[in-house]
Image 1 (cartoon, rainbow, N blue to C red):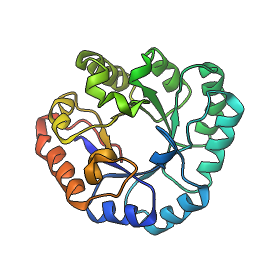
Image 2 (tube, one colour):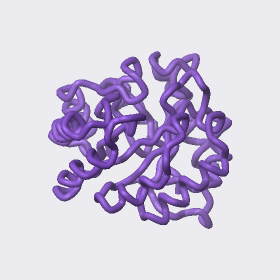
Image 3 (cartoon, rainbow, N blue to C red):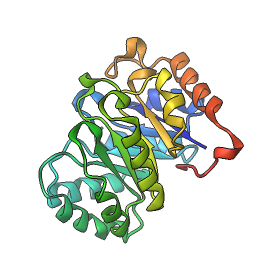
Image 4 (cartoon, rainbow, N blue to C red):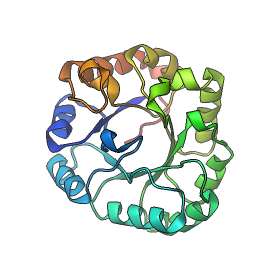
Length: 237
């Protein structure tokens, strides 16, 4: 069954989406970029408030793909107690060396999620490399939010290919990127493990603005409506 990930940036927002029974609470600061990070002490506080009632993921920020800074950021985030750590695979840098260094952390049972950006024409061949390095999952998102939702920057057939390759590698698979209510049915057909939202949950679809509980509930209900016993293949949690 496809799950719902809701991105939040405060204790209050985390408690709001928890009350709305979202499946994954994702911690990030949208004002700081595609995968802007919250301060580690705030992440620790939110994890304590959630107290195991819902899986929690967190981003490490929009960092260049260089082994040392990414490794250090992931190590620091792991100390907060989050269940999953999301790492943006931004263009340039040294992806292979970064993945190789992060394999040290997967060997310590840290659950790492690689985020590829659809609007940068990512090479899906990296999915097998991530599997071999012990990553837990892979996510397809967008880097430039001004370009519109995921389905506007990548062909649906390519999105489907991404999901199939992630499943073949037995990795958790997520889709996000300025997704809207009307995008859910089409993307749910590919049976990703989860769909991620921020802007669609906010007043006036402003991803840096205030969460709207009614919007959260509507998205949750729309995902649930797409569920079918014949489509159940896994869950992020």
